[in-house]
Length: 472
Image 1 (tube, one colour):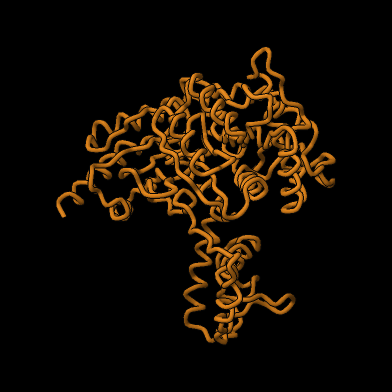
Image 2 (cartoon, helix red, strand yellow):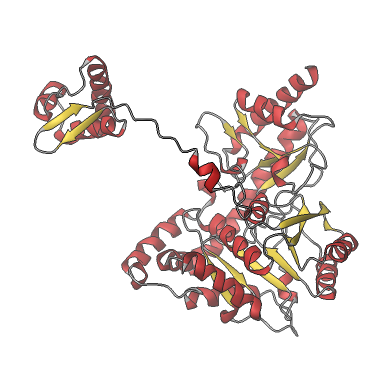
């Protein structure tokens, strides 16, 4: 009731302000209460709304006045062009399509984050409340992370470690403020500007951004629905002298590929043979649908795998907490970069994340999440096959959040994406996931970030845009 009344009062006041002179005093709160027969709180809500819009200004003890129009003196920032033109600086890439904010009246299949309905909201709210009442709300966390959270990450990887392989220790864990910043630290501290980094092609757009921002030279290695070719990977190591290979062996973003056990062992053997490192990004560990994630890091005890696991997408985007697990001096280099970059991760966020994943309800949530993702994935696949048969989903992923959809040969993807948006559908162009040229026209479609009841209509809109594209 308050919201609708305050909105009505705000609308009336906007009309009044539109005809008033700058500096004119608005009617008093008392007179507005009497005129509209509402409480003072409701009037104050309306005035705060106008203040937020820059239409009025409140002078405590005096009243509320129409904000005077001030013309800002133009400021010339041209001097910055010369100041930023050093050889060491690089222009930052534009924001990726998955990070765009959009109006509510469009069908969004572009987001890389799960819908709120897929998050453990009750657990997160309770955990934040408990963390706020504890010591973590006021204390400084260790640079490497809260010991209890380090131990949890180590136990999670240790549970997948086969008999005969030495498990990681809690001291091997570095807690990160999200995996994105962790990738930046790994690329800066272990490669350095101008040096090569092998990456799958296509691969996670965030890794591409982190590498380019660090000045690292990307070397693409072709990958497909079943993973990378070990022979191609070995050839890339030999030709470039690279010492790091970044990959997502479980439910790769965007292809959804999951490496079978024999490929995991073959890739690890290639990495070992070249005295190199595999940066394993286990971003979708909690998003298995018909299989479960199986980390390559569990097979390695010699320190060749740098394992990155994030809780941001599965727990809450508001809790940016992840970890890098590495053995030997490489761990110390990563920690040194993180400490220099951000000193430490908020203990409050770490404590809340730990509360969530150690709550008995967490496992129950993950079981339900598996079924929800299966239902959404299957509905989107069926919708595309029925309403947009010209779109090919060559691989239905066993986990993750996305479909990698191939478009007809010759499709102008950028134009198609614009056409879709004009129709009310937002999809992500596949070019964002390629470190070099696109191998074929693709779009990435999320089955986790939108109302699934809209999937059939989304498929029809995509087909309509492709039809218009073909007719042009």
